[in-house]
Image 1 (cartoon, one colour):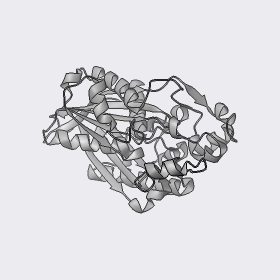
Image 2: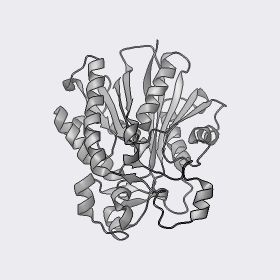
Image 3: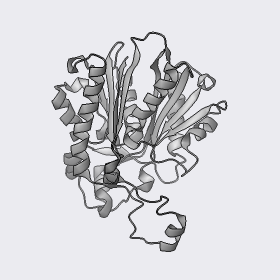
Length: 335
């Protein structure tokens, strides 16, 4: 069987920077309050009138990744798109990428695993490549959160956290089985689905009910998060996923060269860093600048770490994520 290796990375962030001070003008919050709880200083939100969407941002990131991989759009065999904020309820964003990039009529798959979306997508792509079915797979994570956030004091607990953006990776066949993705580890625990959720629209709260109610106080369309509960589970599951990946490959925590955690909350990343005894240069965080970009966060952070020269040939790199579902997972790779 083949190994799969990331050979191209790209990211796209909207130009519009929204600082904590900006948010304090529209809701009862402050820069100190937000930074103390999340570590976030600013995030990017798509401005009104922009043509950017999850698919459009994904396409922009994908073009960069494909070019850096030394490929053309016609070399890509398959598309995997991870998001919780697709342009349409259906169809998914994957087929839009095929059109936006003017690609051949290749297959397109959408992953709806929220914050673990990119980790799941990489794991799926890896299996397709391992079996020899595809050679080059484009994996995208993109989110347009800002259009669906409640920008008021009532919604501040969630709204201050999330940002918009996209990242993309090209995974390619590698015949050297000591390089590339060594293993992936995926988990879920659905009994906690309602601890981090958007309840509507759904088949239980669908178009006829929405039209009939027309209720401005209906908060089911906005994200709900039991923050303390999610935090407690996240630090446990993050650790478990990392340990599982290390054990599967006969590695120890001392072998970690770079950990790219999902950018959910800087306090979670710092907790994990302390638990594993990692130095600052072994963990990459950029939530301070971009907020939580859900399915895009890991790939944006991975791209930025690589662009800054913080990931080198033969480094052991770990991607880890935890999110709504609950779902969590890790990917272990040799760069």
